[in-house]
Image (tube, rainbow, N blue to C red; front, side, top):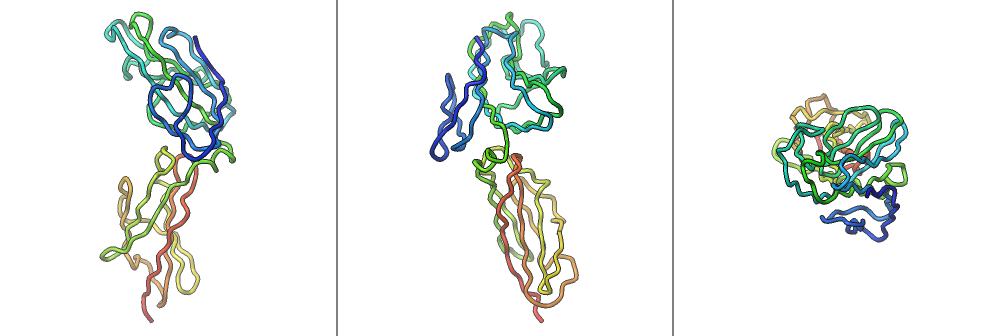
Length: 240
């Protein structure tokens, strides 16, 4: 049996994801309404789907408890993914592996995002996968905590550290430094150092010509949901 389209709204702050048949702990922000998709191993050829508009983004959590009796029997829809893994298909596209981690996915066109398990009846799969699919409109995004970022003075510069608080990872490409000089001029700065997973170093003073006085450096970063961290700032003095 396939169950699609149950609607859930969770109250309170971060709570366990209370979905039918969920077998692993998950968290979802308060106020987020999600479609629930249940894929049962007993019906490997049936793929429940969620209809999406062009450009629509969804946040997806996965809880999976699937056992495979015969993993080596025959092929599977996605050869590079294990038998019993969650897979997806969008419109007429071929099947692809779906991450087990919380994921943000954007529809390239209007269509249906269908889910299934990577296998067939000969694999003797048992169990199910449960997915919560939240549509990321403006109201939903406000329910997710934004990432946090801070600046710390270190020898010869400043270190920026960031933390993902929503569970979908930050997009390090969005890391942005802004320097406001003592005369009010504003510069967008690169880091000049490859960003690590959770921090980056920036030399201070940065390699730009600055007037004397007190300057302000601000940094922010955006997560994969599209939420921006409140900027962190630090001041430094070039004398004069």
